[in-house]
Length: 268
Ligand SMILES: C[S@@+](CC[C@H](N)C(=O)[O-])C[C@H]1O[C@@H](n2cnc3c(N)ncnc32)[C@H](O)[C@@H]1O
Image (cartoon, rainbow, N blue to C red; front, side, top):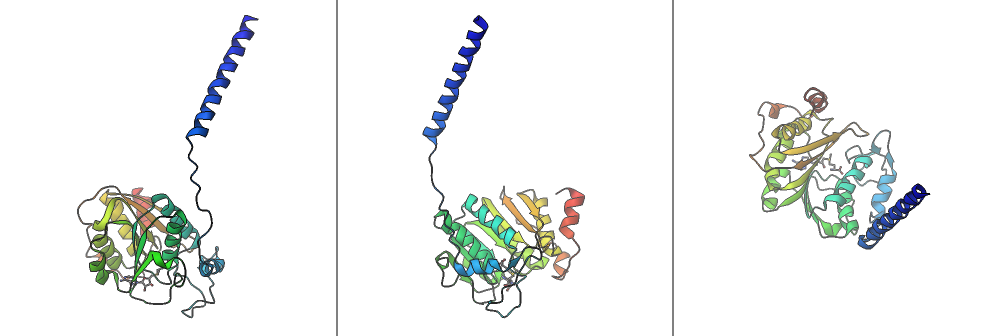
């Protein structure tokens, strides 16, 4: 009898505590609704619909540069990761090298618009072709700099970059130059997005440099076209990243799984 009473008291007590906790959560949760309406312009939705996930290629026949297919724009799955990451990190100043038709640029701009804050993307490319964002609501977030990345440096040198996106010429020489010279403008805690890090040895070797500097957290994943995608977070400022003169001689089209091998041997 006494035992039963004791256990009943315990149960009631537990319920009161649970009720209290529930009430606490209900009272303290501030429901800030995310703007769930997709802000991707129709042009980009149509572009995405042409994506073949097996090949990692867009069969975009209506494109404005006369190609049968597009295997330059980053794969859709990787773009969605970048989009979600942008919504997490809310970068105010984004600098991108390698615009092409502006798919990655548009995805980042749409993420900025979707969560509703003022961010700006400077996107750099010597090739001036029509861009997906043109005549859309995303254009106000984008500042196109029609120059190669080395010539564009003087236009961005006073920026405090929150997110640096590197996807231009995939030689070691160009990619390492970009990272070595743009990275000092990146805020501590800022991010670098890179594409083609697994496919192109030169780009992979740049990722190796980031890892070895111990100033970055770095993570890499394979993608549908086997290009690979990498996200790095700058933990610490430090000396300018070193440029390897021997690797500067590498041609752009070296495809020997350089980064994959490095990650296997050294464990990243
Ligand atoms: C792979 S595409 C970029 C794709 C784009 N990031 C996307 O996923 O939607 C590479 C682009 O880099 C550009 N490029 C080549 N050399 C460059 C340089 N030195 N500086 C900036 N862009 C360059 C090319 O003109 C091309 O448009």
